[in-house]
Length: 238
Image 1: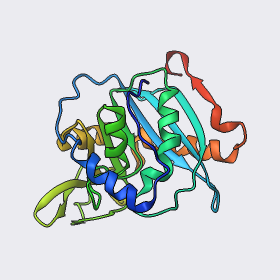
Image 2: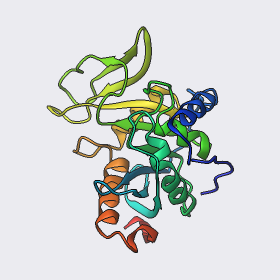
Image 3: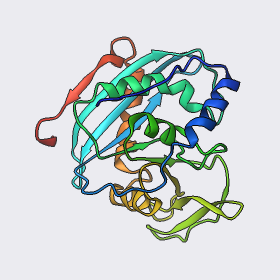
């Protein structure tokens, strides 16, 4: 995947906040993704106390969700773990993993927030601006805003509100299971983002793109050493 622009990640927390405020103005909250044939999930993992981040991207064919490609990259970081600044810790490894993709996914799901973020630039929005393609944040918990509990059935939703502004949606992807929190990353409308999350969920709480990415990220971390440089292509989606 071609990435036309990036920026230094070795910033102080204060510099990182100021950069978020600049990049936030470049986020596009709407866009027609068009026909979707490939979706991807991105995630990162690291051992407790480690400064080495293992980032992965898993590409799946849509709508059957067969895995067609997996890539991974590892990078050291000195940026501390600070809620709201996750992209500065994980970003260098994620950018490198995306560069290694041979596929061109139509939409990339990130395990984290999009605009449902204190400064409107969670990891899905930040990476979406750098990748310049549609991205969706799929988080397991709220970082900002409030949301009522959706009704019990699969597909039920409740808006994530910051004051009176809707910044995302709590989505029940599986009956009697906690919702996930979906927000626009970049270049996609919220309704389409929610629809794709539901369309790519297969009996688990997480949609398959981020579920497969989570599993692969843990696999890479456990095999860290050579594991962070691996790439896998699956012929015919097998």
